[in-house]
Image (cartoon, rainbow, N blue to C red; front, side, top):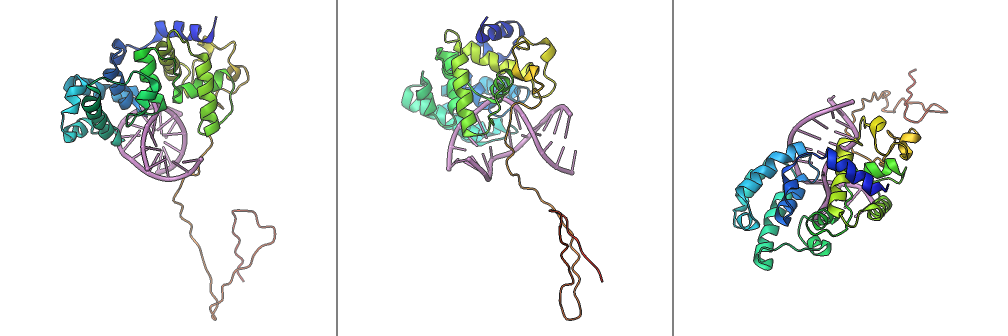
Length: 259
DNA sequence: CAACCGTGGGG
DNA sequence: TCCCCAAGGTT
């Protein structure tokens, strides 16, 4: 049985009942995808409900005041998403008669829509086989296939997109994409994944080599941290610093000799 | 490609 | 308290 078949079978019986899964119209899917960018489903859920209720169609969103859109977005973070959302709704209404582009490349032209979101919309709404690669997909593929390429590198981005694209079920791309993300989100979790009860554990490279907690690999970016050091500087009567360097000084240690 | 954009939750 | 992570995109 293929990777995609096993995955989709798992999805059929394990998927959560989420409101946007009941529809395939690009407005609802686009709205949900923008809201869910870098946002947990539990957090985005209320906002999706509020937006779809307040602005049932792209026309309603387009004619809203930006101020009101931002007000409804309040608390979600990444506020440029809200401005782009409103801007794109007006663009769709004014230049495309309210009809969303129906291809991956067409969707990519919309503000706030990158490769991930264009792939999600085109696969879910138009059955275009474009693989999504989000944090969940990185994790699942890195573990199952034992990929050690850092996910936050350009090489990693290419490699994972290529693999996901190879694995995708071209007959059911939307289903496959959602299944892969759902699997990563609720089963192949970052911490304490359910490896003992996993459809891939006989083949999973990470599971069979003790790498589950090692993969995916992420290169640590140099993060700025405020550190406070206290120095004691001793001066002699003639303003000379009294400090003697130790030979063989260990990096990071400072030695001061008093005399 | 690094930096930046936000908030909430978990370890 | 601190760091990581979350259905990413833009500059």
